[in-house]
Image (cartoon, rainbow, N blue to C red; front, side, top):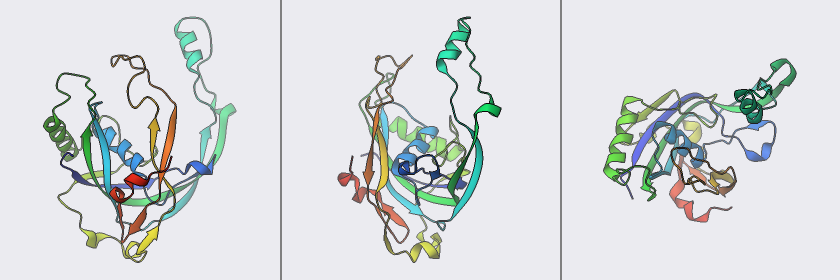
Length: 242
């Protein structure tokens, strides 16, 4: 196992969507490990590594806020885009006045999480140096320290960006809010652990220059406890449910 990292992530809002809530978006009380893996991939990712979340610390009170937003019901048609690019007609536009709909969301506000994680080598190589574990460690460390990323890290949904990401030596557990400490040992119920894609991150066509991936996936669930503000994800990794 690689040497791990500890970071603190802060933001104004977060939305870790519960899949059972259908159209209306309702957030989990705390972030699922898979959502945090996605956040880290926005900072640095290569096929040769996978992120593993070991511990989550919830510093701020778990406060929800309800909002209602205008959204569109449909996506831009890829078929129509290709048709227009080939001068074969087709309208790739979405007309907001016709597709507008209102949806409610229940978000978390003023979030601050401590995240302990490490990365593992996958054995997948996309270039000659991808098996160098030390290289990946140093790049991750440098990019977090400098606040670099190739895609804005977010809390669950892209609309809710991470405001601040800080690399730390250790977590100061005295900064955990009193309301979180008073929860003691609290059962969070069944939560999404991560989404497992059928292709396992490998392009179906075997071409990393122009990859084609599968959209087929299953969700793994787990049932964590938050104990005095800390979720020790390692305790539940072997009892995930598909």
